[in-house]
Length: 340
Image 1 (tube, rainbow, N blue to C red):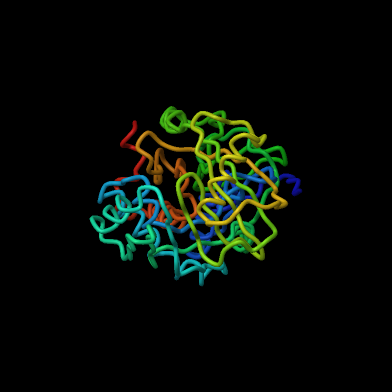
Image 2: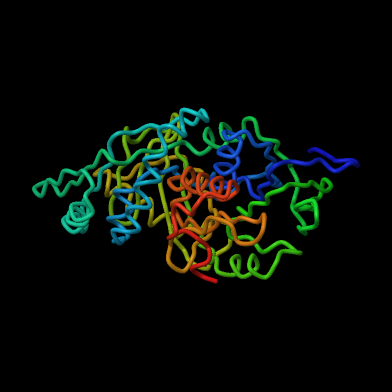
């Protein structure tokens, strides 16, 4: 862990939080020639307890999103190929499938929103080639390349004539720009009222997944109550959505119900698997879309992506990076002013 001595190290930007949003913002700023540090205490965060879905078509159909919200998710997806190539993130998967349940309704929603899809009523199968995924462990490692990682806990931040001074357990760091990517965590001490109000808008949502060493599928498969997706050499089973929950201890009953739903989607009889169940807590805003952009002079937020942090990461990175350059707001639907 770095321990800073005087003088305090200075960067163009400091991001608080090394999840998908914090690292995507940092990676985008680095691509634009900025010197960037990310402050994070380490350990498994919510972005690591995820399947890494880049899935606008399925997510929009499942959540019955508006055309405006669907446009945001689609634009985020469209940034991923170039962003992945530039950062070394492995982006893969050309097929996503839904089986059973309200499949006809999901197909209708995809059609209304203009997503490519194929619906087979006889087999109750819906497929799309609009979605992809990343593997969070590989993606988190790739995004951190070239960024100064400060393995410490941020304790407070204040603005003075030289920019922002961030107090951490490893010492203080300075930056012209400060980015809050603190997930569902509390507000740092010293932040202006606008930032405190933005953080107060965030509601925690617990998600539980199971990591399986066995390769159960070769593409993302979803059904009522569960999905099964490739993950590295194995698979991932997910995922719960539990608003207001913050416990990182997996709930056995909910995990068992999710596993039963996964076997049903697979169309297979249950068998013994070795599963590493994990829980993570992410944040959401009142309207389900993230907050991204400037909230006070030199202070930006990247908060509340709900379960679409990986999908939205490059878009939020671009929005925040543009804001630091004084460019017009490209995604007004994401601007934090809508809640303040």
